[in-house]
Length: 242
Ligand code: F6R
Image 1 (tube, rainbow, N blue to C red):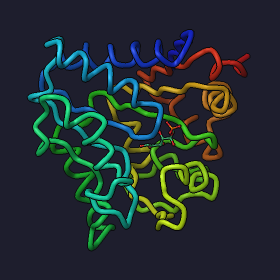
Image 2: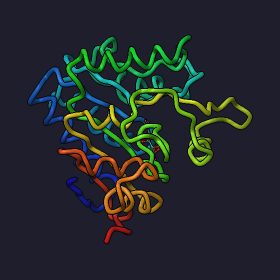
Image 3: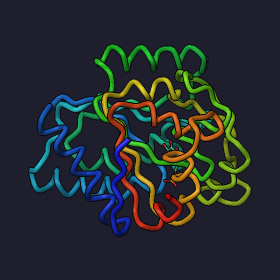
Image 4: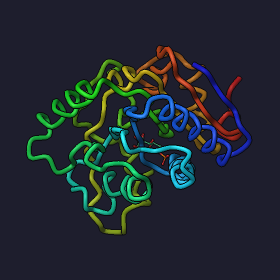
């Protein structure tokens, strides 16, 4: 595990984006694993800037997102498909038919999970996987107690995660409590993993991930087993490291 501590969230985004830019410039048809949430937004803005300045092209890139709410279709403003279109795909030269997000409207979610795993394998596997971390140490929607060998599956969100994400839903609006998420085993198969965390509210989770025991209590601690995991954090998120 390589831990990179930078001054602030802007520096984290720039550093993280450069890893993706270098990856794509080395291998034009890279397979990227992508994440949603607040943390990667600034990184996506850096990628958009780089694409518009012709410093990187996404024309041959394939992407797989980590997770999606079960019960929302891709046109729903709170779906992760919609988020990815808005935050990245609509603004770069990627072919959207090569962008994959688990289907939140799947008729048969269990079959859809298997198909998602197959699709990742058929693409040759993820070259670089972007991750954020939940306050409870989740990665993707792999909540505490998730098996460290888990594959893409339907997962119930914890009360804490539902509360954290409630800010994105209007009062009274349906908020899903189920998701489809890549498993921890799936994530660990990416050739490289880049996890970003910023702000003091992530400091406990960052400490548990980097310095705690490898345990399903903190799903992100499984990254200690990864050969090429880069943890890019700001000083606030690093504040509880020994
Ligand atoms: C998003 C995801 C989640 C988030 C995590 C942190 O696709 O898989 O694990 O990365 O909840 O979210 P933010 O960045 O909003 O703090």
